[in-house]
Image 1 (tube, rainbow, N blue to C red):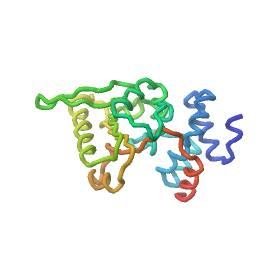
Image 2 (cartoon, rainbow, N blue to C red):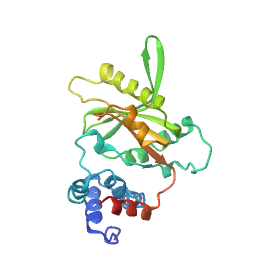
Image 3 (cartoon, rainbow, N blue to C red):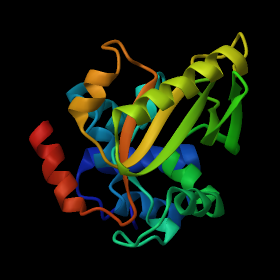
Length: 223
């Protein structure tokens, strides 16, 4: 009944495939539909990519296939204007880890929080570390409640390089780093990272469900 109510054929086909592949319950399907999952994934793809979503669902073959922008974290029960710290955000995610894994997508397994790394006797802590079974790589996530800065990107670069050199196994692929932030400048990200970057990404997050009609309008403009 939920699927029948989806008017657009391509969108309906996407949710049919994902429901089957991921064994979604009706509740999970409704949540993904209401959060605009199809539109959020389609906005980062060209016309062929949007067509592929409709025909094959979400295929994860390279790091960028993991990404959404924004990530929707309404299940954390953190109001959009509520004052909270990065520690509060991290704790809320851990408390709702099952929901967060659903939002991350296919193939994610939780490794740890506040994972300590040591460089020249100095200790650093990575907010969240996951492993993606489909890409066979670590996925390091850093949480920023404010606007993204170039220092945040440099810090993530260090985390990614450390995992590549000291944590990953020989048969595993390069580590992916995702910075989840409230605000970001696309230009700042592009200038700070190498032109051929395929490991480090910045995505926004929001703690309320998006206006799906706005996402639809943005998608219609893109394609």
